[in-house]
Amino acid sequence: MENLEGQLEELTPMILEHGLSVIGAIVILLIGWWLAGWAKRKVMKRGKAADGVDNTLVPILGQTTKILILVVTLLAVLGQFGVETTSIVAVLGASALAVGLALQGTLSNIAAGVMLLILRPFKVGDAVEIGGTTGVVDEIGLFTTELHTFDNIGVIMPNSEVWGTEIKNMNRFEKRRVDMVFGIDYSDDMDKAIEIIKKVLSEDDRILSDPPPQVAVSNLGDSSVDIITRPWVDTPNVWPVRFDITKKMKEQFDANDISFPFPQRDVHLFKEN
Image (cartoon, rainbow, N blue to C red):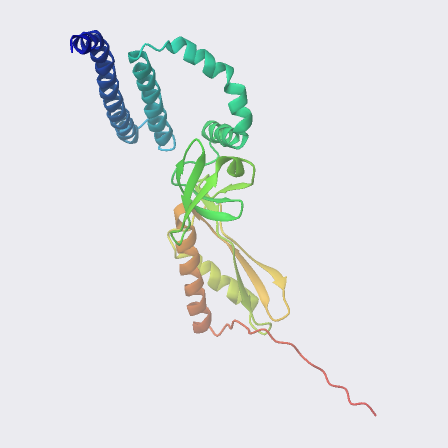
């Protein structure tokens, strides 16, 4: 009995020491985890409210802040158990090459994400076409770029694929040209049709006068005389103008006896003797 009590007396300081270390490590881990989430939300909130910070960078800043705090928290937890953090940093540095070789795809996504953030071919909210996929950019992260299509389907693309393909940014410039073609019958008056088109364009306030719209006969097709119509508009008005002008042209052509011909083909029959 005395031996048992003696052993307990010897073990008590050790239990207290390591028990306090475990409790301290758990407390540090919980506080660090909470602080990392809080700091991320705070940084993103401040970034979205700030005028000088682009919304494209806000998710990156928030995620980077969280990762840094978690790394500091992990080092503090290890230090609580007496682990030399300097040696851990050295080991991590020595193994960086092996990790890099094993994670080539991931690192290429990070490198591509950095290039997207530096060169800025598009930003959050832009309408883009990337590798044949068209949609609106929601977020540019370190690993992936997220967007949603115009019919509201979410798309997540690895940054390496985004950076390695053709990117069309539909919001890059303030003005865009709307290309439309209206076909009329060969028997209709071309000059009259052109005047009607010009009149419809002049009555729409969304169409810009500089540069002026272009209206001209572009093609003599199999079934129609094609009149190309190219007005310039502010970028947000591209699709509304296209839809409205198409409808108005049909109404005005009908009112002025100008027809949209159906595809047709003349067939000549020869009687053999």
